[in-house]
Image (tube, rainbow, N blue to C red; front, side):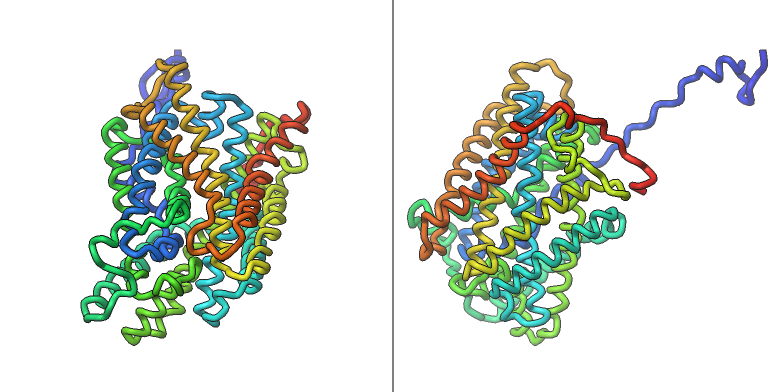
Length: 487
């Protein structure tokens, strides 16, 4: 019997199993930072700055009743069932419910990108002409142009833009956020009056009926995405203790990024003149003019734009890729939407998404107030995405009852309490979303309800139900990916 170079018989060497790959762990601090970077943004700060100090209350409430339950419940699901929300809801409820969940996760981006690009348009206006920030036609043109440019880039792969998004937290969030806070503190320290009340009583929002609570709905969407980070729970050395610690730290950082810049904006921009799309730049413009740094306004605008576009390009193909995989494996999508281009990208899905986004962008051209269109689309986005969370909470309770012994790397404490709190909060936020906010009280309530309800009904429910009704066995096929094309 021959002997190999290690001195063992060759037959033994040939049958030795290769060493198992070592588990790659991440620290709970790293997970906290990853969660913060994927959730926190300055884009929603103007919508809360109109409430001044009361934004503290309006951010804390959804954090406790939505952010915390979502983080802990999704951690248990991710540690027991790989595959994301489709697998969780599919196992806990049904495959059709799982498809509805993953569809809504994808469909919410149809409304999300117009609001994101409206923010980009208003920000870019401060580079060329600040008066354009309130122009509907200008905003619509920017949305359509940038989105189709994003589709073009995404259809050829994402490697060219991956680096841009990785720096987004520092470039477009942390640096501008810290600048806003520092300049705001110095501004008040110089004895300048605040544009918003600073009394202790201002911490609670004035009650003017149900309409005064509507802006809380937008904060639910601000906290969305925690379920995506839960997939990393198995990469922690001690998930049971480290994951809650990471989530509480991330929640503190996210709240700081959301609340402090919003308060700083309220100090210099009066609520009645604050734009929901251009509010961040309004504050920077005022601060820089006060301190004699007017030349820095375009620079900050470009930083915010670069970070936003990087995030858009990175996420543009992500949800559609997940929809493609489910559509092929389980036959939920017609063949024309399952086709890949020469780069291995689901271009037809991106084009279909772009066509709908173009139609939505026209709202900015026909609705007189850009802020009104921005708010309406933000609410529709939230309404569609809340369906995902309602299904997720229901599935989590059913799985704990039906599969109590299924291996889980992490078990959420008081899971049923967390699920019921999150479920009730999600349903309440969904219902409140149909109430026009107080600052848009001059418009028609019926028109507002029809737009929000119609957008949700058509995209969030109508399309997936139609697909399920038309579904054919021949739609199911293997998901074959050409590694050469993807490279």
